Image (cartoon, rainbow, N blue to C red):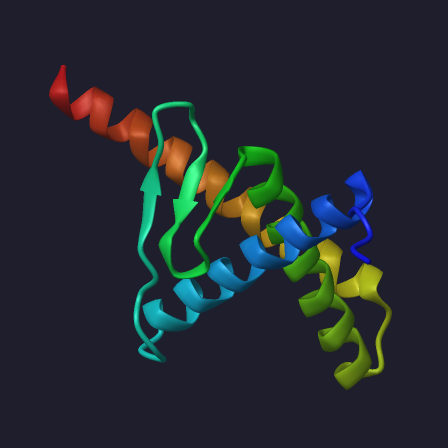
Length: 113
């Protein structure tokens, strides 16, 4: 007898499949494995060819969020320092990089004028 999947289980499964694709893509970017085929569909979803499934932007966001949370937890576990220390340091780095890119854009606009 088959048991229908609950919406929560389907969402969780989609998050996991998307996370698999994100991780495989990131690993391939670093020279490990092959880049999975990902195509945009007319309805705005992404087709993950290797997994034979389509996912939404929300699926991608949730999967990425889960992967980053797992990474932060692992870093905290290995370092013996709280997640907060690493999360705040990472946020400051990203925010600093955003400011630098903004300043570079302003400089390029000034050069073009």
